[in-house]
Length: 316
Image (cartoon, rainbow, N blue to C red; front, side):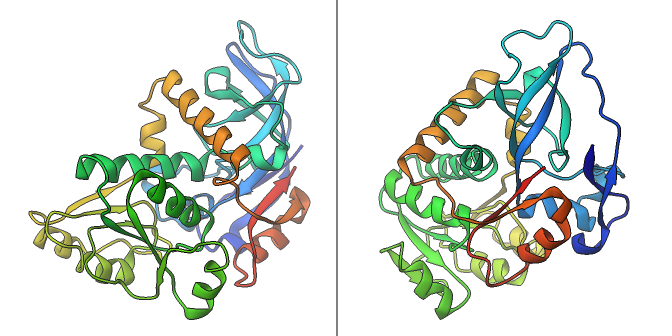
């Protein structure tokens, strides 16, 4: 089979290679899955750079999100059947043609969802749900608080704008340029800004670094700053966080931490909510291109293209 592999940290376009590998038969309690679609997310690429090298073991195959069908059952597996489509979660490895994963980490996909939709049902929707729950918990429920969303024109940014409004908050879409603001205004009728607008009660930040520092400094006392990404390649200034610790609640949300601590029933409920949102439309992400895995270099180049208009998927 063909798979992507990272053997050294660095620029993803330079260090992610392709290689042939032997398929592995599933052991007891595991299943073999033929991957039908896999998504390319920033969370797949950041570990490749070495940002999390303390918990990333080389070599590894990237890819946290995708959908596949069960093609082999290990001894003792129940509740799954051959040909069934599943979302294999809990670890990276989906950028390959076949994957072996414990059955307990595989979640059934409804028949009415396409492979493209199912391949985007995990990382962004479940992260968005956790972020909305976190800001709601901080304020004891929503009462119109102004919440800035950074990188608001991204797939998850657009989800957060919808979910915040549904939850009773006042979302503010924070984008980098007037051009991005104009594009976002075609689908979002709420407040859009290129600079933080006061008063500011909370922020959901995917950028970090110096833009995050500036935004954090504008949160009102009693507010909250929840970071869930570092698209800038840098974290917030720890000294700034410490200086305002008594005024502003700071937290960093890792979806992985929740997934590995939640019950299977809780994860299934989150996926049911995601599937419903995909059917209804608010959680759908536009697709720019579907690339064969063999064209991974072209996919990675497109991922960094400012002209990209949606998500990129791999079809191993």
